[in-house]
Image (cartoon, rainbow, N blue to C red; front, side, top):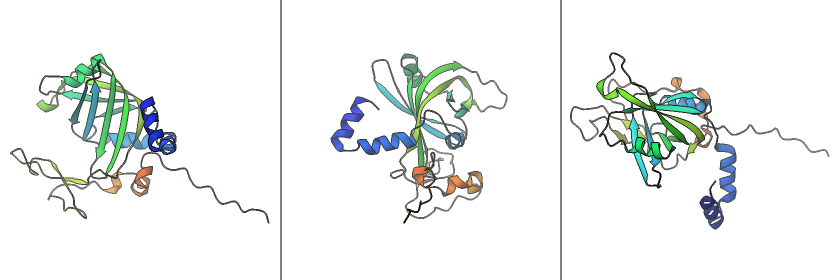
Length: 223
């Protein structure tokens, strides 16, 4: 933790809680549950900064698994064609520090992955690749920190079918579910719990990625 975090923790009385979170929830690699989680995501948020510290945040999306988990310490994602500004890539050439945020709005859980990134040439010339998913560059990030994002304020959302025109729920957006579960559009296959390890579907949200250690049996005291 940096000095600014420590000063504020001491000022607000949260140092002990922060230390407990750091010790139990923050990893320097991706464990199996984290790798499984990233492998099914269709979106992520990416934060970068240039050499002077000017920041940029952006959104990346693709088919499930578009962010590849290469191993416990590396992830990679394609840079699809955009507006040509290349703000994120430009920042990475000056400052390799990146922050990734994955949020599953259906299961209401998030994952932070912080680390350093580099740009690699990887043209996608496979026949049948949709034009919007053809790439020339990929980003490979080395994991330095991975930890859960608190589920408390993440809205639960459901996917709506994509329409022909942009805007509104019919354009493939996600809409909030105010109460209970929203009926799924006809033809949309729900993500069943069969696709998720049973233990993952049952544990507390705070233990989603790093389960709490098992409780030790009580030891009877001698009389």
